[in-house]
Amino acid sequence: MIHIVTDGSVDMPPGWAEKYNIHTLPLMVRFDENIYTSGLDISPINFYDLVKQTKIVPKTSLPSPGQVIDFYRSIARKGEKILSLHVSSKLSGTYSVIKLAARDVENEFNVIPFDSGAGSIALGFMCREARIMENAGYNIQAIINRLEAIKRNLTVVFTMDTLEFARLNGRVTAVQSLLGSFMKIKPIVYLKDGLLEMVDKVRTRNSSLDEVLFAVERRIGQKPVHLAVVHANDPDEARSLSHLVKQRFVCREVIITDLSIPVAANLGPGAIGIVAYPDEI
Image 1 (cartoon, rainbow, N blue to C red):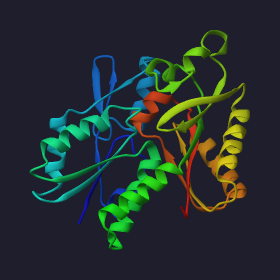
Image 2: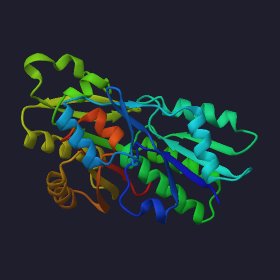
Image 3: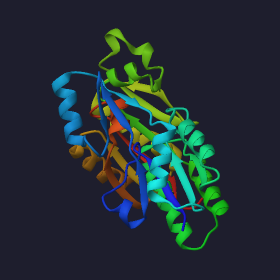
Image 4: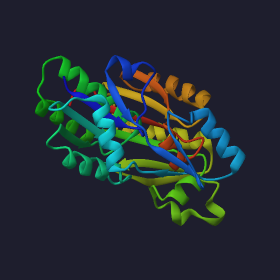
C-alpha cells in the first residue's frame, strides 16, 4: 500500500481522511508570540474567536525537516512508499521542507513529493483520486500522471471579504496596490500557475459572488466537473453558493468545506470560492 500524506492546508469533508486513509501533516499558525498547531491545539472556531479577540492578523509557520521525518516514521515502516502531496511551492515553503526531508530518509522510505500547485480542497481531491487509483491497481506513475492532469485543469476562483489578511501575508499578487480608499473593495482572485492573482475587483459582496460564478463558467462551461465551495467562517453564504452552482453547472458532486486554518490565516474570515476540475481529462 502507498501511504498518502498531505499537509494542514488541505480541506476535506468529514470522513475522507479515514475512508481514503489520508495522513495530514499539521501546520502551525502564529498570533504574535503564541504558536498553535492546526487540528491539535486550535480548531476553526477557536481560530476565528482568537482573530476577533486579539485583532491580530495571524501568520503561518513551516514545519522543520525533522518534524516531517518524525511524521513519516509515525505512519510508515522502513522500505514503504509515501506519496507526499503538498500546498503550492509558490505559496508556501512547505514543499521545500518536504523535499529536504525526503532526501534525508531516502535510505529509509521511498518518498515521492508532489507539488499540487494549489491547496485547500484541491489537495483533498488529489489525495482521494490517488487512493482510488491505488486501490484500483494503478502504479505510482499512472497516479502521478493523473494528478498532473488535474493540476493543469484545475479551476480555483474566490473572493475575500477583507484585504487586510492577504495584504499583510503577501499571498495574493496586486493586493498591495489596493490600499487607502480601496480597502472596502472585494477582489476576485484566481489561482494561476500556482500563484493567487487578483484579476478583478468589485464593490459589493453580491457582485463579487456573481463574478466568481461567471469566472468559473468561462473556464468549465458545461463540462461535467467535481466541484467544491470553500469558505472561511461563512457557512450560510457557502450553502447559497452551492445551490447556485448546482443549477448552473454539470456537477458530478458538490462539496461544501471550511477553509483550513493555515489558508484562512492568509485570506481572512469571509473568504469564499469555488474549486473545480473536469471529470474527464
